[in-house]
Length: 423
Image 1 (cartoon, one colour):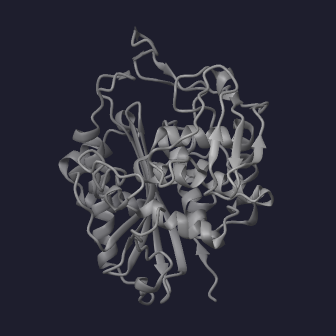
Image 2 (tube, one colour):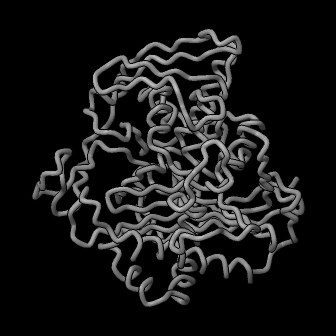
């Protein structure tokens, strides 16, 4: 087997702290040569739009496995904060799969019913899930909803299953020193986010097989760096505060880390041992399916596709048009949107033309400078940015020469939907 070659200038940055802004001329020139006036306006105003772009060029062998990959950066800066929003659901989902393997000795797995109790102020109990085929919540069902429609409640439940301390110790040991996940997606104090619920899993006989006690995180975060964005914000009571919003204690995951998490999940052989996710082949098949499945293909839950259209969570290429995705293209991805920030990390596969590549991007679209007022230029500026950047890279991919031809119809990423299964 040919050794996988990594582009050192790109990947060397991923495991180090506080890396400076990086741009590869190739990617900058490619985008600028083909950019529309609107995209050029964005590229010419980095202070306003705070954009970052990563393109991973991927060469595949005949069986669809990796031959070589190279990262190209455009204005990527680990020190420039963007709110990662729902992209943090990616590592949370992966950690939840990992943790379930630690509990297999109790006779449970990711499909086992998971009952969440209320154990501290601000917490809520969850004993039923009407979207599941059996009416019961589970780690598998929560992960499924996270990737299909970026469900916030599903994230909150997995955050509680893992616990703040478990999450951040795992991030640290994997080498993501700048990453932190500190909170649920619901208004809570820092103290309440440190406390997580008692959780019970049911075995095949319907009886409690394992109880995880309520816990308090003692993890020590470094909040010394102040992160202030905007000129004003609305507080929890919708009152206007004429001061920048303080993100100093919010979730934080630099863009290279997010794309690295995705690539190491999809291609476990890529990462050094400490950075690999502890996932089985069954876990990978599960992820390939639900990372790329569309709401219209889901039976449990059954989604209203006028609201949750197929490109609802597919920022690169597709969401700007709110339409169907070509049947021969799948995007294995996780996006996030909040406070005017839009972010997506994606592994995109074209099965008709036998090409694959990865993209990561983030942009800030908040013309009035007020945060938390739900007045952002997502539709006018944000989604078209992802569409155009994706199309430029895709057209480049269609035309570039490759060292050999892959047959992606035989690859492990060839996801087929099985409508007879509850999952």
